Length: 319
Image (cartoon, one colour):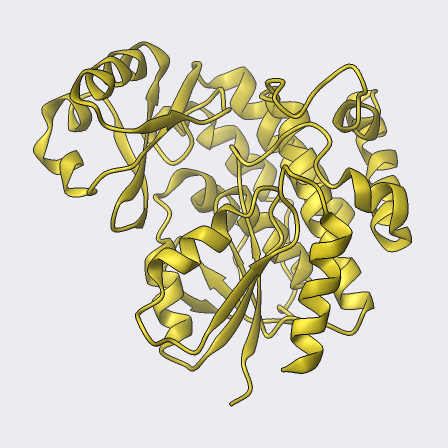
């Protein structure tokens, strides 16, 4: 049975310095798109994002959390990688994004010109940084029911996403998250503070709502070229309203529901085009036993990007 190809794009927290560097050095389509976007970034920010992403003074472990740099950088890398696959003849049947990745998915699906959506991404980053108090997000490796049962969680944070049966994310102001991390450590519960400086998918973003709505008044979305699997609604959509880009940042992420909507239509080949392969892991953790669907990632912090790219193309060619 033919598998539907799903391109997946991740959001804030998956960025790191030198992501996609091997592709930038050796893959001409990737490099061309990165340079195209960098010219736009230079106009917006007055700096080269390519020089920031591939700064030799930074390591992959260096903190990369300046929103006005990380937001557009994630967009650039993931969109450029999608264009590499499309240039090789591998076109998606569906696109799926989480958080910022929803904007990348919309760009790949042709909702707007890619450069214009990059400007929108930068505008969102600027507004959130200037309007919203510092906050953060914590990924917790535990049964998500803990959130509803533990006052330390539901009183001092908001549920940003449930990714699978033993992984969820909370968001909140930094002072509250510090208390939550102390609680989790005392209870022996594994967690990871994500490299973000604002509490996406929570009411902490509300101070940016009005100005962002004004920005979105000037946005008009075209008919999508590929169906988009919404992690805002947990279902396939074929048209976007401009307000969707606010919802993608503000509303909880419904990744398992989005995946179920795809699985109900038949087997898929899920391709994670995010920098860390996180969504590839989420797919693996959500797929029911016996599912004929397959999944793969191209980029990881451990390099071998070209090798992984070739493996994905070989898998697609072989069916």
